Amino acid sequence: MSIIFPLAVRPVTVKGRNMLEQLIENVHLITLDPEREGAYGVLENAWVSLHEGKIHSLGQSQAPEAEVTVDGQGQFISPGLVDCHNHLIWGGNRAEEFEWRLQGRSYQEIAQAGGGIASTVKATREASDEVLYQAAAERLQALLEEGVTTVEVKSGYGLSLEHELRVLRIAKQLAKVFPVHISTTLLAAHALPPEFNGESDAYIDLVCQEIIPAAAREGLADCVDVFCEGVGFSPEQCRRVFESAQAHSLPVKGHVEQLSDLGGAKLVAEFNGWSVDHIEYLQAEDVPHLTSSGTVAVLLPGAFYSLKETQMPPIQALREAAVPMAVATDLNPGTSPLASLRLAMNQACVLFGLTPEESLRGVSQYAAQALGLGEQKGILREGFDADLVMWNISHPSELSYGFNLVKPSAILRNGVWV
Ligand code: DI6
Ligand code: FE
Image (cartoon, rainbow, N blue to C red):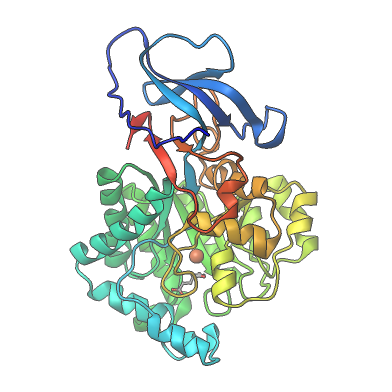
C-alpha cells in the first residue's frame, strides 16, 4: 500500500530566465477541455508546465525542462473551482428568520413583513467597512480552502448609491489581499430599499441614472444583475436596468424564475446575458431562447434546499438544448447560507440529478463561462490561467461524492502555490 501525503514542496517561481518556470509531473490532469475526448477530458500519467501565471503546455510524454520540477505523486489536478453566483458581503445574520421558516412561514411572507432582504440591508448599512470586510473574509476563506480560485461577489444589500459602491469597493479590497480572482456584480435591483416604499419605479430611476453610471465610471462592476420576481422587480423594470447597463457597456445576468415564472430568462437572453440563475420555474419550452444567446443556466441547489423548494429546474430540457449548466453556492444570509461549493456540487447531483461530471464542469468550465472568463479559466489548456487544484483522489467523481471528505492537497493561483 502506498500512502500519499499532501505535497510538502512549495516551489518558489524563478523569473527572468528563458526556461519554463515550473513543471508538475506524475499527475492525472482533469482537463475538462471540450476538445479532448473521454470522460472529464482526463489525461492520465501526465505533466503540466506553467509559465508567467499561465499553463504553458501539458502532455503525457516528453516533459520539458523547468526551473522547478514537482512530483505530483500520482494525484489528480483539476482547474481551480469557480463560484459564479455569490452574495459574499453582508451584515448581520438571519438565524431568527430561519426559525420562522421552520415554523411554516414562507420566504415571501417574511419578505412582505419587512424581514428577508430588507433586514440584511439595514444590518449592512449599519456595519462598518471593517466589520463587513472581516465577515466576508471568513466566508471567502472557507471557499478558498475547498479549491475555489475565482468567486463572483454581488452587491445588493446596500441599495443606495453610497452603500452599493461601498460593498463593491470591499470586494475589490478582498481581491487584493486573498489569492483569488473576484468578479464583481452590481445587484442594486435586488430589493426595494425602505426609503422608496411604494415607489419602485423611482428606485429603478436611481439605479439606471445614478448607481449604474457611477459603478461603470469607477470600474467597480464587471456585470449588472437583477432580481426579476414578485418580491423583486418586474420584467419591465429589469429591462430598464439592462438598457442602462448596455449603455454603459456592462454585460447583464439575472435572478430569474426562482419563485415564479415572469419570463425573466427570455429577457436576459434578449440582452445576450451571461447567465440566468435559479430557473426552477423556467418552462421547458422557453429553454431554446438561451441557446442562441450563449447564456449559461446557473443552478443554485443551496437555495432550492434551504427553501425546501419542490419545483425542479428543467434539467433535461437544458441538456437537450445543449445549454451549459453551471453550479454555484448563491451564498447569502437568507436563502442559501452555504459557504461550500463542494457541497453545492453534491447537492446538484443528489437534488437535480446532474452527473458528477456535469457538476464538476458546472463549477469550472461553465462557471467560468458564466463570468465571461471562458477563454481564460475553467479548463486546463495551453494559454489558460494556471489556477490548479491538486487532489489525492482515485477518480474525479470523488469531488462530487462526499461531504467534506476530500480536501485539496495543494492549490495554485496564477502559477503561485497558495
Ligand atoms: N434570490 C435569492 O435567493 C437571494 N437573492 C435573490 O435574489 C436571497 C437573498 C436574501 O434573502 O437575502
Ligand atoms: Fe442569488
